[in-house]
Image 1: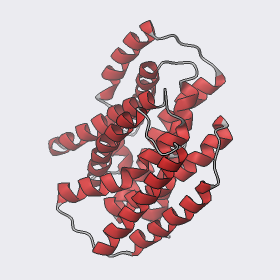
Image 2: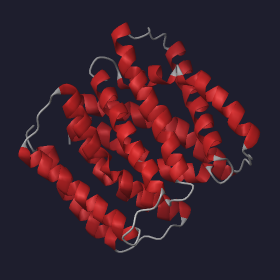
Image 3: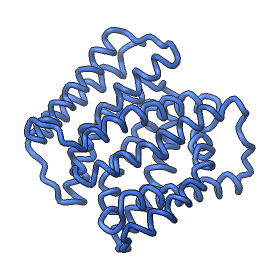
Image 4: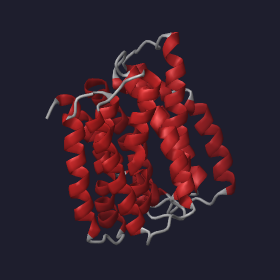
Length: 284
C-alpha cells in the first residue's frame, strides 16, 4: 500500500465516525447548534495552528477553491447531514452517502478534464450500485425524506473534496482545510449565538465527545490526511476508498449507538472491497 493510499484510508477511517459523533451531539443540542459549535471549535483549532506555525496566507488564486472547500465540506455538508440525522439513523445515512466517491470523481473529471478508463468507471459504478442496493435493503425498499438532505450533501461535499484535492497539490493538505476554516469562524460564532438562543442545550459526556471528535477528528485530522492522500494518488482513486466508509460507519453505529446491523453487511462489504481493488488498479 502506497503512502498516499494509507493517508486517504486514515481519512476514511476518521470520517466513518462522523455520523455516530453527530448523533451523540444531537442528544443534547439542536441541529443548528451542533453545526455552529463544531464550526467554531474547528475554526479555532485551525487558526491557532496556522498562527503558531506562522504559515503565510495562500496566494490570491487559491482563495476561490478554498471558499468552495469551506462552503462544501465545512458548512454545507455538516448542515445537510445533521438535518438528515434528525429523522434518519446513522447507518442509513452512511450507506446513502456511500455514493460520494462517484460524485467526487465525476466532479473532478468535469473540473479538470481528466479521463478515466472504462474499467475504472465500471468498477466505480458497480460499487455505487452495491451501496444503493444495501441502502434500499436497510430501509425496506423505500428512501426516507431525509435522503433529500443526503443527496444534496453528496453534491456539495463532492465539490469540496475535489477542490481540496486539487489545492493539496500546491500546498500542504492541512493548510488547505486550515485556510478554508478561517473565514468560517465569524459565520460559526454568529450561527452559534442565534442557534443556542432558540434551541435547548444540554451538555453530557456524549455531547462533548461528539463535538470534540467532529472538530478535531473528522475535520482537522481526517481532512488533513484525506487531502494529502488525494494529492498523492489522485482525487478519483482516493475517492473510491470511501466506498468502504458506509460499512465502517455501520460497525461504529452498532458499537457506539446500538443500531441493528443485518447479515447483508458482510455481503456488501465483499462487493465494495472488490470494487475498491479494481479501481485502485485500473489505469486512468
